Length: 266
Image 1: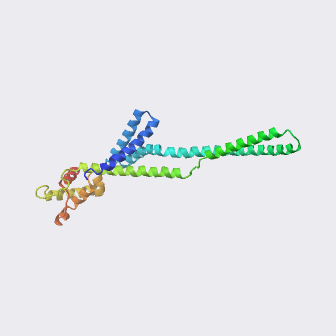
Image 2: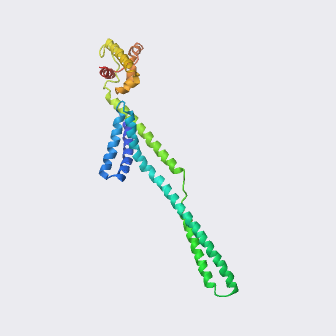
Image 3: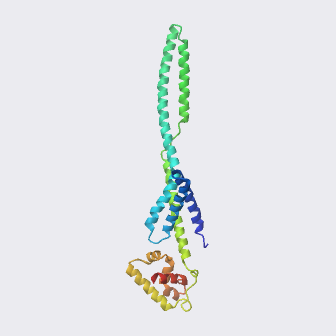
């Protein structure tokens, strides 16, 4: 498919943009959030299409991913932290209730003993029983409200989200780069070169020598040279093997790619 990369670029860009927009909306105004999210993502994607911009592209991509990652991971981590804090308070309250219950139980025991010896302790006994029931009910409610905290799961989820964003963004950058390279080629890229009607064979040999000289002078390989000039690496390889491939009657470099190479060498 000619536009297959768009099936990757559009959904990933939209997903990252939506999460980025949510993050910036929380920290700026709505209008400014749109500008931040759109500008950062557009700038990062642009840098990935440019030669020798890998480090700036990586830095800006880190900023683009940081917002969405914070937006998705922080609620999970904050929730676990809040649960731990509330559970600590509940534990302290339960201990306090147990101590108070023990005191009332001891008082109730003393009242029961005194009541067997002389009358007049019945009201004190009823009061202690009522208070002990109230304390036990409060303890049960605190135990019910205590939430089990998961010490590792929230961090594992955050890690999965981080890896997902990194993987999707790397795929997006690669797809955009390939899509850009595809449209920088000439329409005749799939036609086999004819040395009699399109490009003279002598001229091709001169260009091959010129390319070899350029590689030697710049001290780079053909892959690096292709990236530098935004030319498909396979086209450069086919071009340098032109004579060998022609003898074997195999596909050689296209006329469009030869024109690109010639323009880069001029």
